[in-house]
Image 1 (cartoon, rainbow, N blue to C red):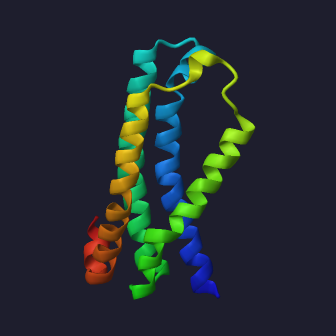
Image 2: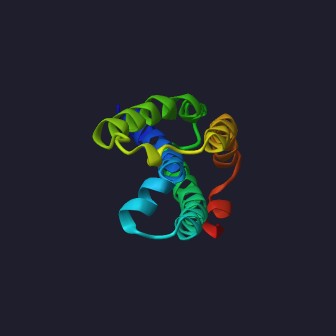
Length: 143
């Protein structure tokens, strides 16, 4: 039961790793309107946040997967398990913060970028799990 809980925590972290940048990307106009920042400044801040989250999140996930999930083949369930948590986060966020201003709707191109990212993301999770299963302790500690 402890392993199942840890597997779900790692899956929640995977969902958060894609949820936060996606919401920042989709809500650029809203953030700009509420903070009175220019859209360019919000885009730069979003890009910097995305880079830090990818680097920090990857290191955290590698560490937790290696330490908690013990290199089992069941780790590959995280490739699928992050999806329900991601949908839950999107639903809760959209329910709490609905778009009430027409100017806050994102560009259609942002949706295409989001779809592309969501298609590639399971392969990213698969690669991270493969690295954790095939590597030894010395490799993770040096990262």
